[in-house]
Amino acid sequence: MEGEFAEGNFLGLPTPKGDPDVIIASIPYELTTSYGQGTAKGPSACIEASGQVELYDDLLDQELPAGANILTTKEWNGEGNTLQEQLDSIGRYAAEQYDTGAFPIFLGGEHGILPGILRGCPEKVTLIQIDAHADLRDELDGEPYSHACAISRSLDEGALGVYQIGIRAYCKQEAEYISSDERVNTWFAKDILNPSTGQGSWSDWLDKISQIKGPVHLTVDIDGLDGSLVPATGTPVPGGLTFWHVVQTIETAFSKCDIISADVNEIVPQNDTPLTQFTAAMIATKIIAAQINRG
Image (cartoon, rainbow, N blue to C red; front, side, top):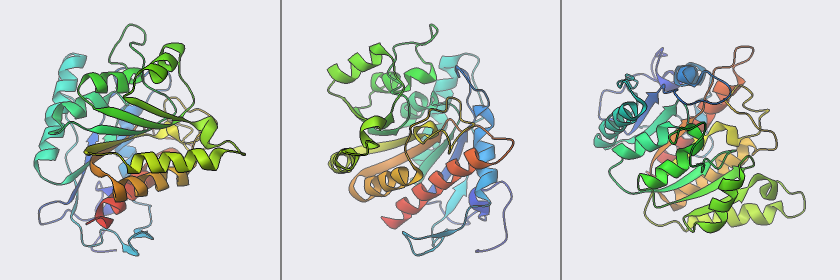
């Protein structure tokens, strides 16, 4: 490890002296969770758990920070009296991170942070989404900006399209959205994990995301993984992706696409074991390594 362990910094890495290459930005936002609670404490739990992540990465064949300046910046301050004011505030916070020229990784917080992030994004992006849920509802419990509507509202905010994988929990309205809107490209978990034909679906996924043109934002709702890996996340769902599905998606996307930012969301601290937040920290670490690897 380079330098002394820095409490409160992602991976315990010392605060860099030069301009950052990667920024870890926490958004402890939780206004519309519909089942399990605690995402507001997710970013800090993820950063704490990251202190136990091994710094060696096999993609880089060296230890992080691998010559890069990785900055854990001040978290979003929660400014705003209404949901829309808070999303606007998240947008301003995100814009500050983009303006540095570094690669921002946002830690959430519920998935409802995504439309706010896009308000601060300087470019129109295509989304690569890892998730158990389609998040294409028009509203949930009367709230159109619920975390269950994150992708619908992101498309409204100007996202050009979405490639989503791991989907296995959705309503009829979302099924109709998936089948009728050409901006939405969905790979269902049951197809990816099918014992007979799953490899074909998986190869198709990797091939299709490799062909995305223009800027891309990667959004990782950790409930896209099987619930056994993230039992404390707000809405864990069985039958999900493995950790290695997520890693290969990250490494393929970063090697083939113009990824300009990422988020890891729906992190909820797990009390009996740190498995949930540690899994989230591992995913964020893989994103960092993939970003450094492409130079």
